[in-house]
Amino acid sequence: MSYVDKIIADIEKKNADQPEFLQAAKEVLESLRVVVDNNSKYEDAALLERLVEPERIVQFRVPWVDDSGKVQVNRGYRVEFNSAIGPYKGGLRFHPSVNLSIIKFLGFEQIFKNSLTGLPIGGGKGGSDFDPKGKSDLEVMRFCQSFMTELYRHIGPDTDVPAGDIGVGGREIGFMFGQYKRIVNAFQGVLTGKGLDWGGSLARTEATGYGLVYMVEEYLKSISDSFEGKTVSVSGSGNVAIFATQKVQQLGGKVVTMTDSNGYIHHAVGIDLDAIKEIKLVQRGRLKDYAAKHTDAVYKEVGDGSVWDIPVDIALPCATQNELDLNNAKTLVANGVKIVGEGANMPTTQDGADYFIENKITFFPGKAANAGGVGTSALEMSQNSERLSWSFEEVDKQLNRIMVNIFHNINDAAKEYGQAGNFVAGANIAGFKKVAQAMLDQGII
Ligand code: NDP
Image 1 (tube, rainbow, N blue to C red):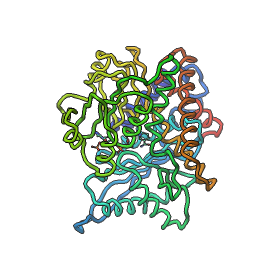
Image 2: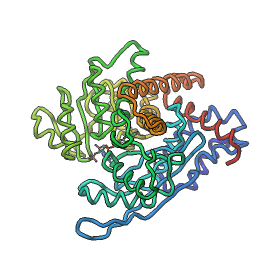
Image 3: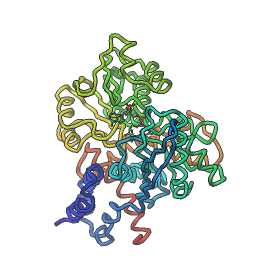
Image 4: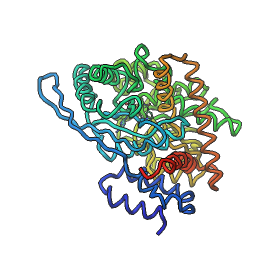
């Protein structure tokens, strides 16, 4: 049995109840066969056994009091997966679907993503099954304060620096940062995604969506093409989706779809992004409200077809994991899609991703394509250490540079290992090699 097969059998046995973690880990391990099966130094050092086991998992109780005076209890997590190349770094997700499998899959992906940014950040992820939707600001504040009252002891500016993710935006980061500062009595860059007046970085809000589009743009440039005139479908209508849409529009592409957890809109003349921002960022409303105002847009509830049924040149899934399956992939390919770029983490199922690659669709996995968010978080950490704030243009330029570098690194790695054009393999291999070497250099820890 090969080294990789042994590790896959082992993780399947130990984590049978963690499907998302197994999916993410197996995808990476499959790509690493060409690296580790021919080089015994990895097996001799039990490198993969260590890589798939988090350095630390913290799980805790989060009690809080709702507006009616009733005590509620949620579950909190922080998975500190790998610190070989820097402090743990990765977002916090607040969503009812959160469980240990999801946090472990996200933390595992984060190791390779952070490595690809070229910046000194390790991999981690956390969150809670708390649902901020429908809660008052005061309820969200009480929850965030309780969450941080436990989390604070596990994090620190040189130890672990969380950020936002699904359900955790500027409001939640503010409440958590305030509580951290109150407990430790120090103003430290312990969270990223902070407000601009208290340590945040310009362009962090835009970074993940912009970065995704910068990567696709660099690929298009490499084939003497551009976004000009391309039709694009985007899923989600949160942070990543909104700023991916904005950048596509700035580059001359036309985004025709968006989704939320209730349904999707198809607006053939192009999405009115100001209306989306008003509904989603100001009113915290639903996409249905968009269709009510734009009578030429079509709104469909979940279950009534799929956003991936719409014919487009480029598809950018930016909502959540496993939102694009094999059937969706087949429909997109049949309708002529050329490029798929993942803004979300693992939005494409394994068979869907395989289908794109087999059919020579240019497919950028989330761990490369959405790395601009964490890359810019690392730039926020640098600014906090310097006690300086860089201009929007400076941060945006660095973000662009990070994404262009990642594109070329994963492209080169794929070619070096005989898989030209397979950016999944390229991202996994390039991300792994740096972390693996750091782990080897640091001994058996
Ligand atoms: P937001 O919470 O801002 O937006 C998430 C969007 O996806 C919303 O439109 C939401 O709909 C939809 N969504 C979430 N869960 C589901 C679900 N289970 N089914 C259907 N729709 C769903 O999150 P972000 O935009 O920040 O994150 C989106 C993705 O990008 C995630 O996979 C995240 O891990 C990834 N990512 C985010 C980064 C960042 O910087 N924010 C960095 C790197 C990756 P609704 O409004 O109805 O809930």
